[in-house]
Image 1 (cartoon, rainbow, N blue to C red):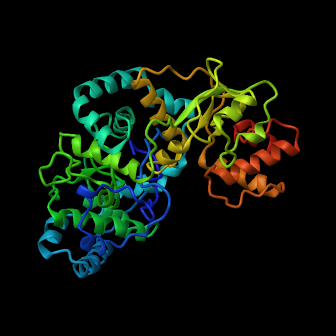
Image 2 (image 1 turned 30 degrees about the vertical axis):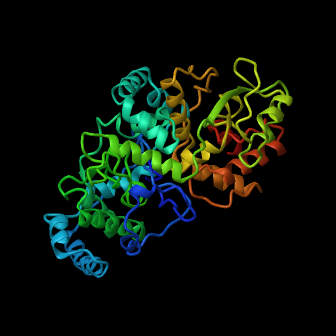
Image 3 (image 1 turned 60 degrees about the vertical axis):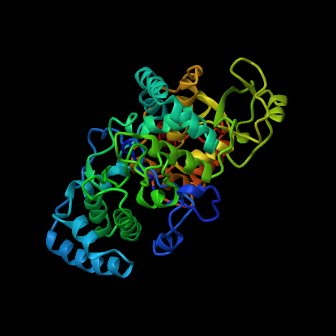
Length: 436
């Protein structure tokens, strides 16, 4: 799982300190010791890749297989030192050459973006809701058993399945070993992908799947719910009891159970919503709408923050207020389960997409509030320009990386406060124009 955009974006997620891996599915600890993973605390997921915006420069990739062959020879030696057999390596790397399309996609992905409403229009379309309800009905018995075993609601597991592979219809046709070897040879994130490639080889060594059957996205995410190989080792389960943790075949049960085990491993709270759409009272102090400030729903209700029917949100635990499109868009009261879903993919749009799709599959209503549909998404270069201009104006974003995360949102909010604007932290095209 990763931090990009495809049907699948990331960095290596953490299992350090995680206690939720399921006993009957845990890999052999002696094998685990040989997996050299740079564990961190973010997600391993890829995100749905948007259509490139017109006028954007596309990086041209020219691949040479001679340095790739030299790198591959050295990597084989290291893999053998980690216990991968010659037979597995021969099977895995037969006819594997560098894939320039994978490099191109990796280099260009940060340029592309969608507004949250454009993303949700697709992620939670009427067609996807209908297909999701059909998938729920078809696999109701297995999903109910998975829910009972892992404590993760079947609608949530099904929603992830829907966003990652359209309920199994688009699991990815890339040779996973070829994709990972290409990205491991590339210098941009070599260490990350070498670790993932080694993890993939260990899956082949264990016999859960053949090299031919190990298919996935261009970035190496595999199966119905797009697990990276390291996530597979940590969380994949043999739900069917056939001796294999098979997330690739037409039977989705192992993949769906593995997804539930993954979320349970990061502390999913049964019965707690990911979030609830709320209405903010007139005169609401938008400085309060930040992730680090949490209150009980009853405290928020006392301040006038109610659900869309005008009732207090039940006390599911402490929550914060999220404004993904600023004061002119929908507002959500989000709970700890929102953070758990972020372990699958760190993008707010993805988490809201999964959560809202799960709600709709369970009979919930559409999002009531409108969005600022007159706005467009800032391009990658514009997001970097926004950060540079904010920092230059004395509102330090800490990084100039084109990612609008908490540091940039706080800088935007500080700028808005200093200039008499609504301090909602929304990085809009209008804000960039004002800074110019």
